[in-house]
Length: 276
DNA sequence: CGCATTTCCTGGAGGC
DNA sequence: TGCCTCCAGGAAATGC
Image 1 (cartoon, chains in turn orange, green, cyan):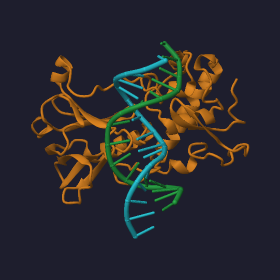
Image 2 (image 1 turned 120 degrees about the vertical axis):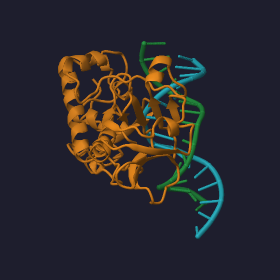
Image 3 (image 1 turned 60 degrees about the horizontal axis):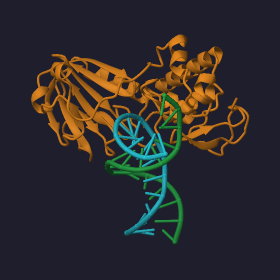
Image 4 (image 1 turned 90 degrees about the vertical axis):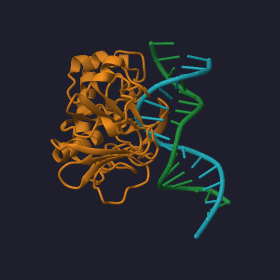
């Protein structure tokens, strides 16, 4: 379940390892996970240099020369790895990008195929693109300031659903929503518009602290997630509520409760996070 | 508009 | 040991 911290960890690793290198060749095994410019990556990409690696929301974005942008959405089980070209290719590896320099390649795997790869080019910007749409995303929580953050929250929706909505706040998924709400002592079903200025500011600080700590631990690995170097994250050891149903709250020892909110398992401490 | 429900998909977990 | 069912979960579409 890569969320913002996992995508950030991958982007940082890629920046260290592939920035400035060239895409020598591309092998696509599944075309149906690729969207954007209709032309095949095999003809579009070879020879281009990697000029930037960025993260936006939960997405990892690679900018190549000539205004070409590769946007990886990892969904549930998406993984980006750098591997020796001769190494075993794991099942569900949909695209392989051979890199200049060492005999290495970037691989995109996604067994469950909730993710995808968007190839945006000057042509797609002029004429729109084919395949699945890449939804707009909202405020970047790490750089957001209190006023726009509060503005985004002044709606009559449950705070959990709102934080999960990528068009509103970008990059928070189930884990970091629950962890942030716990840190801010806010019940997940609270109507967002009922939070006052102080509560919103406190929530933003909690979100930022939670995300920054998770990034420092290379994200959370529950099952699938690995960083681009193949290593799991370790932030799951610091989870306060997520997947801790029935276990004592680390602040007050009250058992953590699990409910369904916004269609997702939601964990919170009923004593620390009171409704109203 | 809000929000619950359904769909996509596979691997891992649990039941027997 | 092996087969079967169930289910998580991000995003988008559908229904109310």
